[in-house]
Image 1: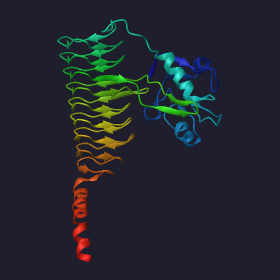
Image 2: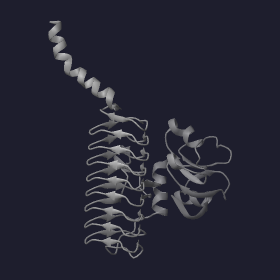
Image 3: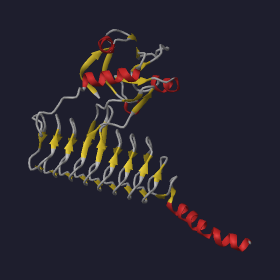
Image 4: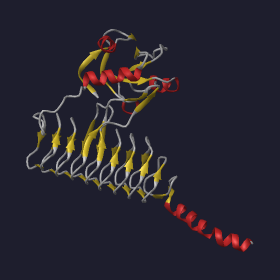
Amino acid sequence: MKFPRIHTLKEIAQIINCQYVGADDFAVHGMNEIHVVAPGDIVFVDHPKYYDKALQSAATIVLINKEVECPEGKALLISDDPFRDFNILTQHFRPFVAAQAAISASATIGEGTIIQPNCFIGHNVTIGKNCVLHANVIVYDNTVIGDHVIIHSGTVLGADAFYYKKRPEGFDQLLSGGRVVIEDHVGIGALCTIDKGVTGDTTIGAGTKIDNQVHVGHDTVIGKKCLIASQTGIAGCVVIEDEVTLWGQVGTTSGITIGAKAVVLGQTGVTKSIEGGKSYFGTPVEESREKLKQLANVKRIPDILNKLK
């Protein structure tokens, strides 16, 4: 998430009321999670296990809960609770603004696009040309939808990321300030849910077709011309490359990559990154030919036991 203008390190420290290491006028362009940071971004870290990863990342400002040696060319924001202060920055730069109408006056809707009754279109949404949004589609703030997109009834674009920190009193949610981006010629079925990024974009690539009742987690990037069948659940921060097929009831863990043109058969649990151009099945996931051989051998066990007797 980039800020509307470049801020100084001192200005950011004043917003969250913390100490800092670096020049007062050190430039701060935005804030992001570690997997999408770029120079000028703030990244937060609150566990020693991940200090080095954050300090050596592309981010040039590290919001951290301990004063450590600052890498050259970077700055530190010293906080007793980086998770809390990252939320404060999200609230400051992308606050929730209540809707005043079913279709926000700040939304941009392209020529030839049809919006059916009972849809909600939030603030700063952009919808391209010749799209169809069927009844009861919900499009949260800042979502971007390309041209020739069809979205069926009951689908929700832009709900919050499922991202929590456990505290003694309960779970503390990491606020979501990112977006959903739907590229051209995408088809999305009924009752799908696509969560926005925490600070970046959840992206559905051009030409991809998604069946009914599919969930896509925050910051996931789905490539071009993919096919995703019903009741598939895709976790956050997943990369699905171009022309992947996921059949019904596939589930994935977070932070993995599914290679281009992979085919994942129904009810598979994708527990790790998998190469493209192959077929997969089972939980934990394996190449489908090998997994099916294993299942065939399991069926032979009773006969083998009888022979041994």
